[in-house]
Image (cartoon, rainbow, N blue to C red; front, side):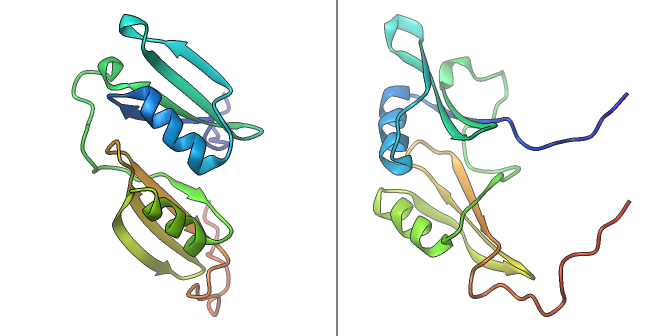
Length: 143
């Protein structure tokens, strides 16, 4: 049995108002959802955006979150790879996202996280940021 992880297929963010979140992410991404589904009361309940060939960003109504799901920033942070971390961070904050974790160098990468207007943590990571430190070379592979 092959148990190798091959990448993230989809990340789901929760929102009380999926239509507003879908509009916000449409503005941020520059393209609309590739799939939508109605939710309770006929309101938009789900919207999926194609990030690349194999990755989706889903926005789902908070009403369908599993019991005990965290609805406040915290826990694990998924990081989207970006080429220009500073430009993407500037765009997100200009649209109302709040910096949650400041830009932080981690050797050959720099990461940052913001909280979108709907309470979701959006992590970003860059392998080409000027503050990245490549002096130690790439991280050692284990296993």
